[in-house]
Length: 144
Image (cartoon, rainbow, N blue to C red):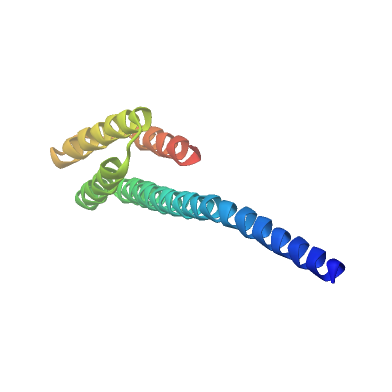
């Protein structure tokens, strides 16, 4: 009988300590799960923003290349339209950008493209080397 009571006390104590020990980590576990889900959402949104940024930069680069092809075909009105579309693509990038350095570079690049578009619409001769420079700048932004 003494053995039975000792075993019963031992089981009760072990159950009590197990219950108390098991109750403590649930708060930590809930906090860990909340932190993990928050980090996952932040990472996913960051990837999505970067994807849209790159997509707009690639679209702008494609428009600049198309403008260069139109310029070689001596079709300046179509080249000006393509440059206008490139400016629109770059403006969508600057709207979503938060960091300062790439945003300044994008605004400078947008200014260059607007100047070229203005020169084309005024009928001035534009060399394809300026478009090559813009294309290289877009490549540099895509690598970041």
